[in-house]
Amino acid sequence: MANLRLNQLTKRQRRQYFLTADRIALARPERTKKQWQFVSLLLAPDHVLRFQRLLRELEHLQSLPSTPINRFRRLVTYRAYRRLGVLLGFSIPPSVFGPGLSIAHVGTIVVNKGARVGANCRLHTCVNIGTAAGERHAAPTIGDNVYIGPGAKIFGPVRIANGCAIGANAVVNRSFDQPNRLIAGVPARDCGEVDTATMLIRATELLDGEPPVSQTR
Image (cartoon, rainbow, N blue to C red; front, side, top):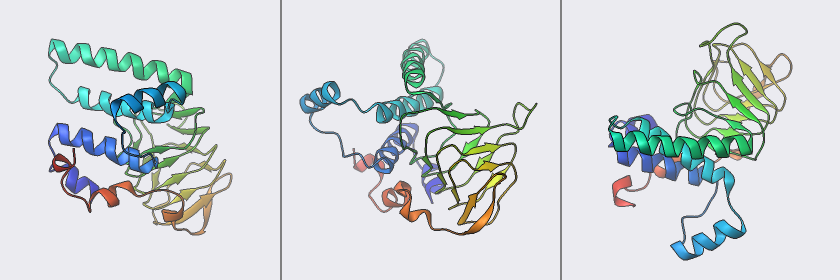
């Protein structure tokens, strides 16, 4: 449903959809008045939300024509995104995660740029989503509503179906094509049925029940 709606949006609407879905997935409130927002940023900065907003802004700018002003905006945004990513330990490239990304905590996360992850992914610390040894582009494809626990490692051109949960410290080096399965162990195995609705917020499903993005801004 999220992909169907995204195809109907303009680039500006798509940007707003991703930003809103991420905020909902992170369980963050809507923005307050600017003066209170400034005070809150000084007293208790939300670094994870800030990083995800920069990530989405960079994705949006990369989709725009390469005019001098857009190149300048991309450079400024990339530097801020890169600097904050280094501070937080995040190595997460643009255009990998679908809407509704939720990074649970600050800490090391490494994701290969060839990976593709669907909507509403809940991502914990010390996760590595990478290629097979000696490969550059053979990266995982992960479905919607997938929970990835702390320390999980997912390598190679594997597929993870919708609604799966990957347990803490699991090492996933083969595909799991059946949806709604608990994947755990070293090497990972199917440990039975699971419902990730209790582990993450399906932000895109909440958004798809609302008016079009252009009417909610």
